[in-house]
Image 1 (spheres, rainbow, N blue to C red):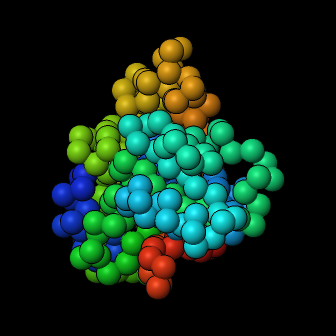
Image 2 (image 1 turned 60 degrees about the horizontal axis):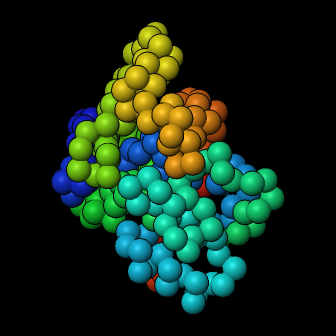
Length: 230
């Protein structure tokens, strides 16, 4: 199995084989929490127009949208996992658009298969890949808005590669907590808590808690993120 790491939107365009589109803060951590809290279906979309078009298709859907970290006006939720209220999304279709993660999905046209990447289901991702045994794995770190590297996504790619190769990463928890001084420092800014609450940081680095992967499929309505339990 060949494992290559790519970065940003340009990297997503180059990804082939089985592509893991990584967005730790916060898109694909968010999607795991949405499914864990009872969402029926998640549909990632790239553009804002495509997001709001779903209001016409399904008036009962929940729109989750973010640009520059802030909730898009007119959406039900931003990209904050700690903002999900128990019971409010149970059985609902979620339509999700973000600055980085969902852009990676729509740009990974060369990939044979796409799954999402985060710490919260990292071991499940590695197990899924081992079972599939693809010739090529592309780890795509989406970074900040798909245009600048982010430490958390690079660390997630390194952790996934260590799991796939059966290597220990004994300092992973130290490195995860260290992200508060790197890619996650904005979650600790007292003036930024409305957009980047500290609780989101801890939820996004809570590794290996979910036993499912999110596999991206296509149908007549576009992309759909399917929960695959292992």
